[in-house]
Length: 238
Ligand SMILES: [Zn+2]
Ligand SMILES: [Zn+2]
Image: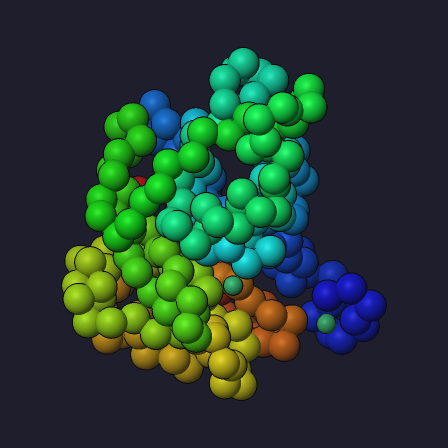
């Protein structure tokens, strides 16, 4: 957190040092990134990512969207537009915030984007089948995504029963858990643990963690079996 000198923000433990929430999903043929955060450029540089086939968006909040301009580098490498999948709400925001990428007369070098509107129906990107899960971020509809045995949900604090059915049977789940205190639009730690247990997902990692949650190692040691805090650079093989 800019300007903060709390014990988390000043911690020497790398796991307390977080950029904004995002994941990359790779199969033999396909690489996709979920959300382009304001840190997207650095996240790609840090991992040395050479290829991204598509971006999919959860919701149009700035901390999940702001980095889209930097898909320009991938346009340059592939000489193709970036395939972008999002719901109508995110599409509206992308067209507004990145208006210059959608104008009829484009300045040379602006990001090239090919938009696909998605709903909560399953879709495919090459060999990757993606099942969107509709979740609620206070009153904003947000998309979580299930990729076979793996489910990713960020920025939620409510999920309806029919959508919970889409999550059941996952082997691994990533879920947002902001802090211990209650929050208006995010699950807190207790609520996130309760949801993982209710859905009987055997392995879970929490994301979208605030500095208010506390030190990684301390919180990690308090969590039930199978539940962990996520951290930057965490890699899961499924
Ligand atoms: Zn802090
Ligand atoms: Zn949000």
